[in-house]
Length: 183
Image 1 (cartoon, rainbow, N blue to C red):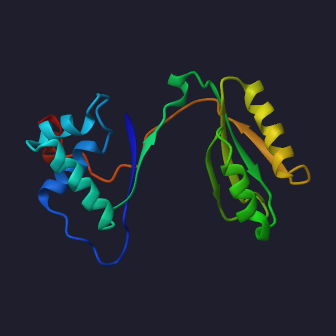
Image 2 (cartoon, helix red, strand yellow; image 1 turned 180 degrees about the vertical axis):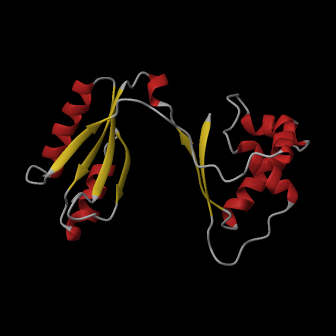
């Protein structure tokens, strides 16, 4: 199972010991796809499951981890079409419209980016996944009507090919990390 782990970037770093580093290195490419993934991680590190869970809780509480999430591989689940929809939204409406878009189950990403005028006028982005292009376009039409987006310029950019689909990586692959991961 792929994971997306976001690390804290505050100026005062929390204390992270060698075991925490080994733990983060082991899960950097995802949790094992198993009924008790933390138990498997614990076994790889010579720890018990409760300690692994407690360490993740501490890393989250101390701000080392901001988020612990799953990266879903949509194609493997039967979602064969996806499109990034880019919107030219008045800056004072981005927050409200972003919340509206993010509320739909078929939206997996929704975020604001700065415009790059004059070449790129779009400032709000959302990713729609569906089983077919027709489903994506149908969901887009429903979303446009529901959020009142009919008058806003937008483009629908369907993906043609996947190059990478994983969470961010924060540990460099090295012998120590490979050793910790292999147990």
